[in-house]
Image 1 (cartoon, rainbow, N blue to C red):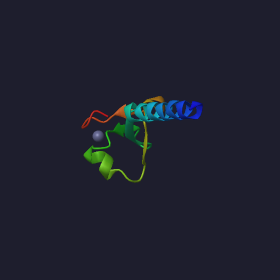
Image 2 (cartoon, protein in one colour; image 1 turned 90 degrees about the vertical axis):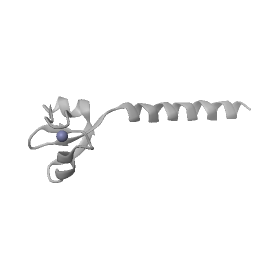
Image 3 (cartoon, rainbow, N blue to C red; image 1 turned 120 degrees about the horizontal axis):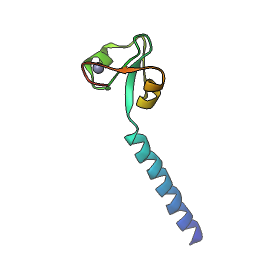
Length: 72
Ligand SMILES: [Zn+2]
């Protein structure tokens, strides 16, 4: 019985972590031009050479500026 409660707590924690991950905004960051895009942006799709998906905060920390087309 005690083990079941622990399992429920564990699952709740995992769900909480998942939710946090969903809310953390991922952007496509161009390390060359230091511009970041929404993953749905046409420029993000075109950028394959210098771009990686990072957290928006991470992109800003590295001096990133939002794209003028999608607004980051
Ligand atoms: Zn863009």
